[in-house]
Length: 125
Image 1: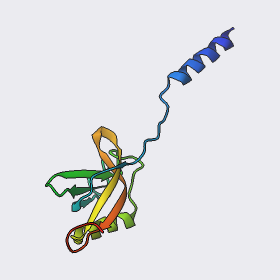
Image 2 (image 1 turned 120 degrees about the vertical axis):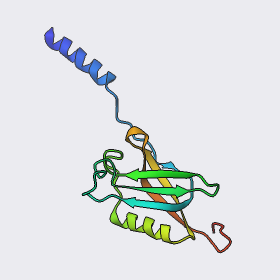
Image 3 (image 1 turned 90 degrees about the horizontal axis):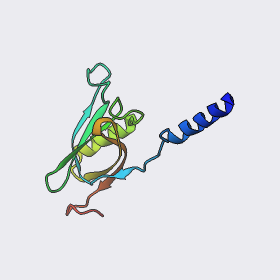
Image 4 (image 1 turned 135 degrees about the horizontal axis):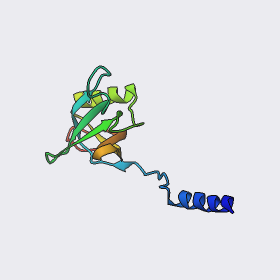
């Protein structure tokens, strides 16, 4: 009898436990990289996030995206991705489209980036 009650309780607990749900990457607005911050392990902020990129849209708005640390656990960028963001910051012809996931405390975590080269008229090819 006790083992049956235990099985019923375990079944109820399994049904009530939150299930891990995978969420799709969200496409953010396309814009220019206007600021890039890479946080080194010796910084006091490194535990919170490992870096952030700020993207400006054509009408003057800004959005900031983080990676790594407690803001975005398990969502670190590779060195090559950080270098590509730096090149996009240096080249006014390049705009990016970040792909994000929600992080802790409302942080937007950058998990992928599309790089787009504009033509001389500022239009996308």
